[in-house]
Image 1: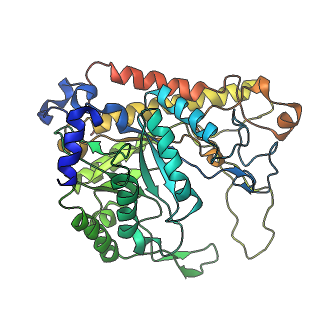
Image 2: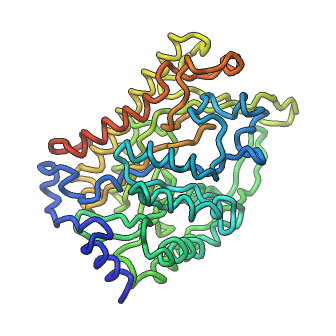
Length: 423
């Protein structure tokens, strides 16, 4: 039996969601997403980072930080400086994720045999126990990673799909019932050179031509042509011309600094080239800054991170300013959620025409960039030493997760999705 037939048989027997009914997409505005996608929770996918450790210390100590009190984050997680390899931590994460109504995670994956790769089997075991599915975000683990793209996807499918008999590997179902795996890649569409502030031009490590990417994406599709209806390949890029030329199906934007008010234009650009698009639900951006300033006169200065949304100046020692930032972050969650739903539901744009919907959530636990939905400590629970660090935790450290839970619950039971106002 071919993999496609096996998977569909498993779905009909209860091993996965039943196929959604076929829908006339011209009538999308009259339908709810939950009616179009029988597995709608699996279309909300948390970005997940299993890279934290205390023995030895990894990631918590970036930018001259000194855990466990002083972390590489503007927020103190509710679990403190945890170890990603802890099964108890994974279980708590899975419980929180499942409570939101989201149905999957997107693992930040760093190559075959990497520390993260070695954790994947346990992560999948835990997520499966909580009814969650798993897919992968291919990271730039070295400068040769683009040349391994097809090999890496084949490895992931065979190792974590075939060998586990597809127990929790995400197979995204379109509205017409077709399905297949979806992969996102970071640092994909690059310029061949970069120019620094002194005008010095240098080659960009990891640059691959459009033809080079096309060879990789073609190979993926040739390898699995008889196994899935479609393997969806998304690039984290706004360069739709090179994305199309490289053979990708579309774009999946990660950066919260690409603000929701710009998404309609990018969606139109994608539609003009027949590309899919996925814009993430996000809480904003509040990244840590290095404490050590490079005094080399030849070094190009880097701008300090700016709080998004809204920018402005915050005195993080003041409870009122922390609550003001919380309000801004809540606004971004609501704006990004509503905008990605509306654009992906618009019958004039590619996603609706193809019956495709996918909303990444940025992120569950990227603590360095301050966009984590994972609960942080309530401000009142910070110790005196932690308060001295200057953490940005508000009074309610669960507000992001609770806001998302309410939005997803509303969508799962909502009236018809409204199409976006695309001019």
